[in-house]
Structures are given as C-alpha cells and as structure tokens.
Image (cartoon, rainbow, N blue to C red; front, side, top):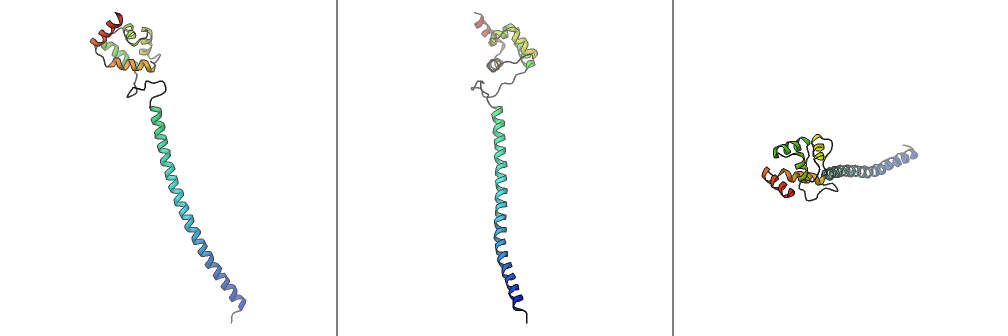
Length: 145
C-alpha cells in the first residue's frame, strides 16, 4: 500500500497541474487575441501613414502661398519654350516685355535661363500662349496707343 503522504503529494500535484492548465489556457487565448489586435493596429497605422504621405505629396504639388488661386493647373515654364513662342509670334524681346509688363532684359534673362518668372508673370505667360499673332498685334496696338 502506497504511503499516504506520497498519495497526497501526487494528488496535490495533479490538481495543481489541472489548475495551472486552465489558467494558462486563458492566458494563451488572451495573448493570441492581443497579438491579432496588435497586428490589426499595425495594418491600420500603415494605411494611415500611406494616406498622410499621399496628402503631403498632394499639398506639395498643390497651390503654394502667393500663387494665383484661380488657376486650374500649375503653369510649367521652359526657357526654350518661351524663346520659341516669342519667335512664333514674331515679337522682339521689347514687345514681349511690353505684353508681360517686364523689361526686354528680363525676357532675355528668362530665355537664357539666368532667371525665372514669378507666379504672376507665369500666369501672364500662360495667357499669352493662348493668343495668336493677330491678337498679340492688336494687344500691342492697344498698349502703344
């Protein structure tokens, strides 16, 4: 017959293991739930970071302070493009300057790439792009007379 002390000891160990197993099962379930919650939060943070970067890019490419807010799209400027457009219209730099309300030297500086037009001047250049030779000559006649 086994010793009562050893039987009692084995029964205590068995009950303790049973209690520990039930406690650890609850902890494992909670831990698993926390891991899935953390993973979901990480995915959400990544999605929000993508949105923030998208909005930052949009804000950088959008209208800057000082830009004319009525413009639909930003105006691109090219020195070669300005020179070729002036040649197409058959204008001297002084005439182009008169139309854009700048000096002839400023036109030369823009065409050589030494300087760039300001936002207001870019808007005037964009408006000038839409005009033909006759319209430009008429506008020069208005300004001169």
